[in-house]
Every structure is written in structure tokens, then in C-alpha cells.
Image (tube, rainbow, N blue to C red; front, top):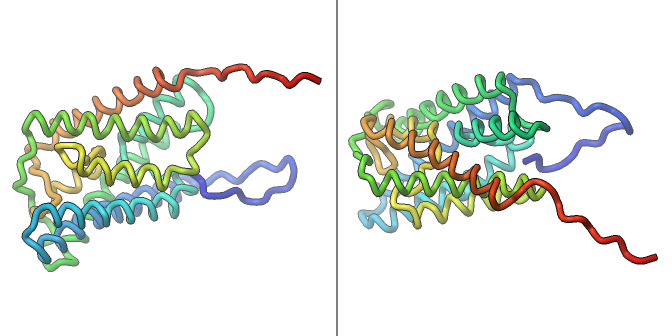
Length: 249
């Protein structure tokens, strides 16, 4: 998801981003994302009682914030901010080879994402004069909500890896943010689609919260959605390219 290319001498080896920098980018990016989601939800409920307006405010803030974070941190870590994306990329890399996250990077990315998500929720609570940790009481264990998470996560994985397969990751900031904004509204679960963010949102009893008792099922369905998304990528974007006809001399 790099925004641009640095100038290198012909034949020079591009510098590798240190793993510590990648981990910091994932931690800070996920923290900022959760702070945006939780903070805008709290702000919206303080400004209006209309649930539709609250969701609109929450989704718009998330769309804009996510797009900015991908543009800013994509060149450093790939701007995953999501264990489902990290694991999907690792699995794809292991099967197909080529560039992608390594097992060592997965072992660093995922804890950084989870820690960042928790920190982001605590920060949002503190900014709005709430106790730093308030366990959510929003039960989200209903079957139709779990189905919504499968759909939301499958669509996200299909989008990201479909863009990668067709060499269009430069559109990721706009495309991913737009998809999440749409999925807020067309999925019953309002599209968490992210295990780390889901964990973080358990730490706030606000508009964006999720009860700790709902976490296991939600995260399990997100991982199922990731598998479904990868299967759709394999089906739709099959390996190999059609032969390009050469023009007649």
C-alpha cells in the first residue's frame, strides 16, 4: 500500500523497514482507528438521541480516519491494523510465495494490533471524561449479527486481496475506507470485521462497544469470513494472465 517510491541508484537494494517501525505503525494505527471509532460514537451520542444520525456520524468519522491512516502508515507496515488481514496475507504468502508478511512479522503484528486497539479505547474513554476502562454491556451474540460479521470480513478480504491480485493497491486508502463506510450500513453487525478492534471495543460501554461475552463468537465469525474472502479471491482472481496478442508487424 505504499504511496510512492523512493529514488534509488540503478541496481541498488531498497532499504528494509525495521520490524520495530512496522510494529509501532501497527500499534499506533490500530490505536488511532479504535480511538476514532469509539470517540466518534461517544461524541455522537452526546450530541443527538437519533440512532440513525449517531451511526452516520460514527461511520463518516471512521471512513475519513481510516483513509488517512492507510495513506500515512501504509508505506511503513502495509497498514493492516487487523489480525484477519495479517493472517490472510501470511497464508497467501506461504502458499504462493513472493512478498508478504513472514511468520515472525505475524507474531509481532498481531499483539501490536491488539495492544493498540485496547489503548485506543482507553484513550477515547479518557478524552470524553469516562472511566478509562468500562466493560461494554452491548450484547452482540445474536445469530444474524454473527452472519453480518462473516459477510463484512469476507468482503473486506476480497477487496484487499482482489486489489493486490490486479496490481491496484494504490487505490486501497479510498477503496477500503469506502467499503467499511458502506458495510456500516449494509451489514447487521455494523461491520467490525477486525478481531483486534473487536477486542478493543469491549473496553468501552459506549455506542461502539461490544460485551466481552460476545467476543469469542464475533472473532470466530470474522476468521471464518477471512477464509471465505480468500476462497472468493482464489475463485474470481485465478492465477495466470491471459496471453496478450502481439500486434502484426
